[in-house]
Every structure is written in structure tokens, then in C-alpha cells.
Image (cartoon, rainbow, N blue to C red; front, side):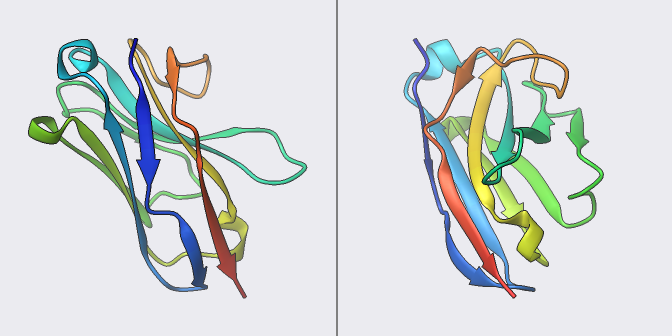
Length: 122
């Protein structure tokens, strides 16, 4: 199985930046998977944030984060990153790393991370 471990969450002020990391437990098993991020705020449904293909040549962003967030991956470290700039209070949520054959807003990914809390104060 693929085990995804997330880190980098925290409490920041509006306008600040934060970088989340997600590392897969096995390079062999991780190989061939797209990766991405979802988030869930209290009382709201989980929503798709962004995803990147295994090859790295395709990226997708939700309209709410486009222009502010950037997804990238480091194959040597089996790690995907989410660089979040110009954070807003409405970005406050638990952020979940995801991986699978396909990672999009329209289907469940094959694997989930445990989640990391991001809180943005006004």
C-alpha cells in the first residue's frame, strides 16, 4: 500500500505563505501515480484544490486557488509540495494529500494522507 505523510500546516496571518509537503512511503508503489490536494473546512464538504500528473506535464487548479497556489513534485524524494501564497481566511481547512491513477474533482483518489491543519487569521 501507499502511505502518504503530510507536514507543513500551521497558523498564519492573511497574506502570508505556507508550504505543505506530502511524502510517499514507497518509491516503487508511488511510481505512476498522479498526486494532488483536497481540503475540508468545518461544516463544509471536502473540495478539490489541485493535482499534478505523474509525468508532471499536467496540472489542474480549483478556481478559488488559481494564481495563488502552486503544486510541484520531487521524484527523488517521492514528495509533492503545495506552495500557498497570499493566504486568505477562507483557505482555513484541513488539507489532505491524495494519490492515484487519476486525481480530479470528480472521483475519489486511491490513497489519502492523514491531513494537516491550515488556519489563516484575519
